[in-house]
Image (cartoon, rainbow, N blue to C red; front, side):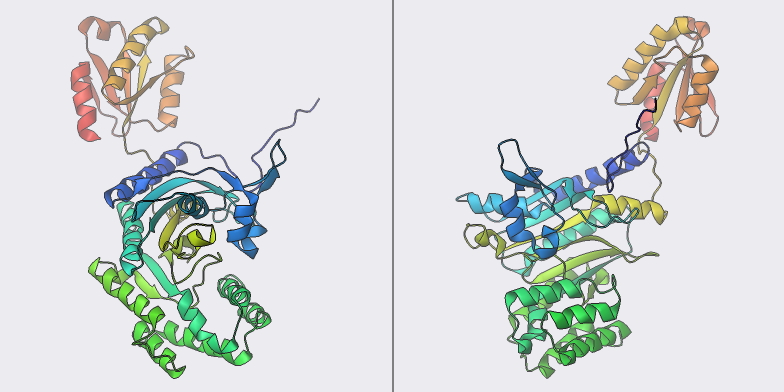
Length: 440
């Protein structure tokens, strides 16, 4: 009789050692940096009411929601991001102390096309958000925090794409689009680089834009790609040609202020205006951002923007808000593929191996002593032979092996071997603890 082998559902995966060690390191780095930047942890449920998710995710996201009925017949859905739960909480909480700075880390779910090592249906995100601040100071705080995470991970070469939904509205003002049509245009623009340009143009036209406006938009994109002039000045000239007074225009001045403050924060070298950036979610209102690693592939690893109207739309008071999300799962996969990481733990690992099974008790006591000093130590639980234990220890990539025999027990010293350098020493446990801690 054949026994069925169960595998993870499509779009999910198991994260096992040693990848799991680096995954944890990225998560802990994000938490540490976010804390340094003044954000406080907050966690919301993995599932929300389906009405909430449908109302504020938008047309594209609605197709991707994992929905289900609970045993009482209520329709629920797994969260597709961390923002919607935060906005729901803020809308329902009276006298929320502002500004409210929070971070969160955890999995989210979207039923979308699976792309190996880049797009999953279950994936982890690390978010920072600031509620209650209208100005660009809050946007810079979020961008600075996420940038600091990348730098702490050794990723110095990344680009922060910047645009504004308000500026896109100005571009297409003469088309007199409804809100729904404009959001459809944004969803089409968000597919630039992911679909053929002609297919994107067809979607933009279907949403209500004329051929002239579409070609005008792509002409500006080409000029910006050439990069002969400062993009902020190029954008200002383009808006003036459309009869927009940039000196008085809120959208342009917001973008200009963001760049000035970001320069003060030391972020200038990473910033790039990209008018094709639109972001797929409907709730974004003005400034939007996307982080890309500079490597073989230009793939988004973080993104976000302003969602000033969302909390009010959920029944709360008007509360300006901004936030960014790091795609932890995608970031780890891309870093591994680009060979920008070594999937090795930052701590030293020790295996204590008794020469004979009769010395297993002494080996166990040494392990307990090492663990009390914060050293990662283990011993074999299956009473295997000395040679098998040593072979497994080397295969597992451990740093040290400690050998326990009759002589070592009598002399109250043990032999420790550095499995990387092959160097051996005979030391007492106190010296071993000190030596390992000095190299960690």
